[in-house]
Amino acid sequence: MSKVNAYAVKSIGKPLVPFQYEFEPLGPEEVEIAVQYCGICHSDLSMIENEWQMTGFPLVPGHEVAGKVIAAGENVGHLKPGDRVGLGWFSKSCMICDTCMAGDHNLCASIEQTIVGRHGGFADRVRCHWSWATPLPDGLDEKSAGPLFCGGITVFNPIIQFDVKSTDRVGVVGIGGLGHMALQFLNKWGCHVTAFTSSANKADEARKFGAHEIIDSRDDRALEAAAGGFDFLLVTANVTLNWPLYINTLKPKGRLHIVGAVMEPLAIPVFSLLVGQRSVSSSPLGSPATTNQMLNFCIQHQIEPQIEVFPMSEVNNALEHLKSGKARYRIVLENDF
Image (cartoon, rainbow, N blue to C red; front, top):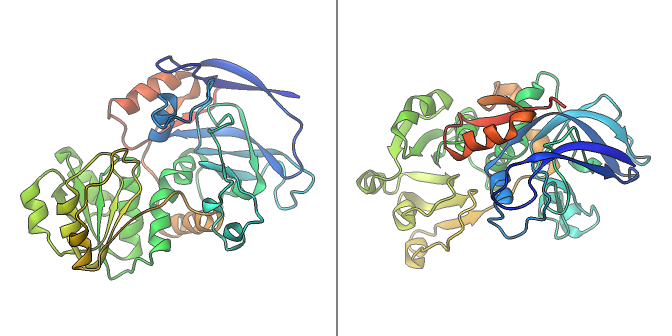
């Protein structure tokens, strides 16, 4: 047994407090990671507040980890102590089902999640199956790497899954932690990119991240004027929008793809899809292979999230900064245990 130092929330509405727990002996296919940095995602807030009704308390949040391997199980041959790795929302998949064997480990029916039923990265150490400990390529800074393993891969994965082309006209709805990375990816992918945002003060920053045009996401007239203009809309917002108007901005065979955790049912008239053979879809984070592809794309095009760094001991202040909507654009905790 070895003791882990962490920060945990023990019930809804309570602040995170210092917390210790013990690891079981390291499994033969497990990797133990010394956490150097851990990003804060809105999903951490959702778990802390049990919005999805699947939180077990006490909860150690944190699923955007960047750190170094300090131990590897006897069946792990490619990772060794000292290797730089990242870990995201998923921490284990079965490796034997048809889905895993097809390379879609992120869709495995028995997949395990880093902060569901286990403790996450607001700690000095965390564990996962070797397949989800992704090596960091040379040139990628550990400090800004963590958010790529959740926010980054969440918006990169649909580009791969739905074969977004460099000639496509795409829109990113919601310019926050996910959206600001989506703008960078899609711009470097070669697309003409439009940012949909309700915050006028984000327009200049959106252009800096790669947007060619800006549309007010709450302006129905602006949405009507954009009718039939987009091949692909990537929705990173987690709120209900005027879905029929957004559907109407799509070209024939266009796709509206949602990666924000919108809790309400979508009110979409089927006829608005049918007449233009349009589609609505969603996706979780990507597979280990797609994650590795994303990291290499980041190195090739010098893409990184814009971050603010807090000591891990100030985790409650950092969470409040996120809840208040002040984050620009991802918050990262630095281990100071």
